[in-house]
Image (cartoon, rainbow, N blue to C red; front, top):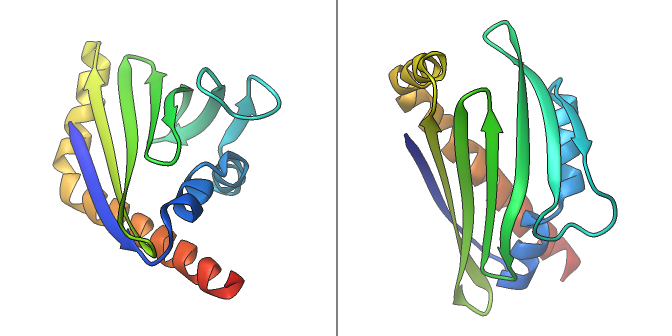
Length: 154
């Protein structure tokens, strides 16, 4: 199951990549939403960095292990995740449209490895329209925030 979102951002590619790789900010957002986040390594985040995340979904405690697999600054980022039979691959691609505009393309691909996880994915497929809208709203909000911060700094 694949989810995609794309947004053009009024900021240079280096600025957008810096914001996309503000992992501490994303950790704080997850904590505010009730998740528990533990980074497994310290220092600078490079390929191989990993996080253990615990959260509640549909009344059950879920655990997720995420690993930064690939990072090609300032163009590409890939995070793989595993959670009780569900494998996820998240990629972020940045393309410079001009010196002051960047296209962000986010792709999330989920696959099930067990029967219970297939049931979870099936329920996600039923809510796909709502989930896609929510993802596009969040990516749009992120893009607006990056552009606004860039405007304020210049």
